[in-house]
Amino acid sequence: MLNFYKIVKENLSFNRFEFKETVCLEYTCPIDAEQIGIFSRNDYLVYVLSGKKTYKTINGEWTLVPGQTLYLKKGAEVIHQYFDDEYCMLGFFLSDELIKEVMAEMKGKVVLNCEQDPEEFTAKMVQKSDYLEGYFNSMLTYFRGINRPPDHILVLKLKELLINIINCDPLLTAYFNSMTETDRPSLQQIMEKNYCFKLRLEDYAELSHRSLSTFKRDFQQIYHEPPGKWIMKRRVKHAANILANSNQNITQVAFETGFEDVSHFSRVFKKVIGKAPSDYKKSLAF
Image (tube, rainbow, N blue to C red; front, side, top):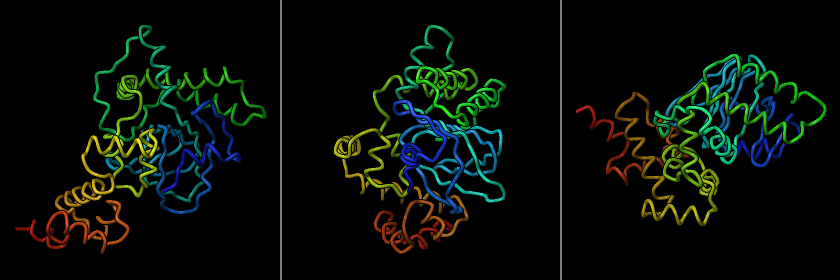
């Protein structure tokens, strides 16, 4: 999978600004593959200027058209691209530190709606508002200008974005608030939302904002087994659930749950479940 955050952070050909670990940019997709996997260590927000693209995570998919905004949690997704019109977006890769700073400044000044459970979602459409629309239009002036805005203006503009989201989306507000209660992302949440993607252990460590050695140590303390073993078992459990509750064939299930090929999937499935996938699916009919 492609490290999307690293690509936008290091590619100087995009119209982009960077402040500490937050990166914002105007992005015209240079990838010509119809489907591709990506991941980002930062949450990011997408606002579509032109074209269409579908983002699929472990628990849903969203197809965006011009004028729509999607907020994606740090993690992986598969994107499906359409080539009828050039896909162009504004992207904001928001650091945890910036989000926490804004929440600290907002507390005590406004009433924050933090009653919803923020753990289950991986991505969320952001409700349209005149304020957000005006914000994105104002950012185009900076992206398409000759000079980079001063840091203090850029910080204010990024905070303006987050405040606009807080004012219109209770679920994201609750999620931002939950981030202030921890010093780094929950390893369990990262694993539960991303185990079926073809990520390396180094990628999981990056998503959870840990070094590889710290990731392995923390993982062992939580799950009491090595990451590779847990990931395979969790993928098989997910595959068994899909076989039991959908009409997808075995090949489709294998690739959807992160296996490289059907034969490998069948071997691991039988080792964990005790039956080959085809036999397991047949047994469900009785």
